[in-house]
Image (cartoon, rainbow, N blue to C red):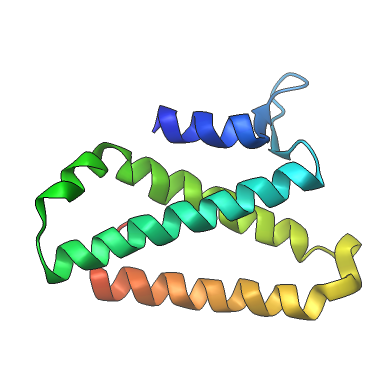
Length: 122
């Protein structure tokens, strides 16, 4: 979990507390949000593909990614949906219809994937 969080932190994902009892979760800038979004898509697609492959054909090499699987599913999903939520906000209204479509379809795909393949964090 810590390794995956460190990868996203090095790409620009930040969680910090500027004041007492206040937490800020977000990205260092638009470029870091794009980097984190594309990395989380890559991580989730590879991990999801391995979940599907392991469900259909049990392979032994999935054990190498197993220690990172929960971190990829949890932090990858958090970073992915946070970046999409920021993209769908009212301040970036240039392409809001497309971004909202991507957000809704992502929710549907994640729910269907988790239901069919019993992936707990999708």
